Length: 230
Image 1: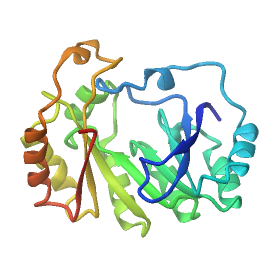
Image 2 (image 1 turned 90 degrees about the vertical axis):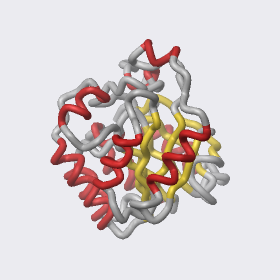
Image 3 (image 1 turned 60 degrees about the horizontal axis):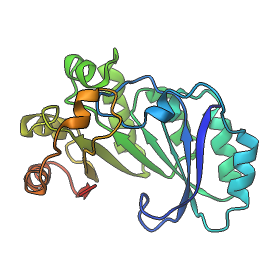
């Protein structure tokens, strides 16, 4: 278990659920627009899982625990860790790229997760995903994870980070077609800063008007659209 950071208090990420945050190190993707390099690339100085569990136990503020990264599903002891959290009576929000549908399915089947936030990095084609993630990705895995999440019975959202050039109206329509009928899609404003692709650190994010136009497009496909980062 590779835990990079633990944050005691978060009141903005999970609606109506005051939470703490556990950030897992490592990721199988190197998304060009990712600005969590300090988490993805860390190779030492991990926090002790038992110490983090003890901190969560003593955290009377937090009703929930947000598990994020990096990519949590690449941590082999994740099930054991979540089981300890659930023993404390805490809710669990899992943030994932959907790369490991079997692991995701097992966690949901065992009632280890109360909310899933799944990133969609690009239109669901191998070429588009490779361009945005700088990784070889099995699109079947991503599609399976989408179905698993939508059929799970737990609350969820899909998230698309709106990166200029990388996500256009056409791209968004393609993504929305792949999650048609979903409960919720969150459009996340891109914020430049320490991205894997350094060129993206110098581009201007879309103006709010453009994001709102994309919001209108998405409403034709999913039940609810949220916008964050504006």
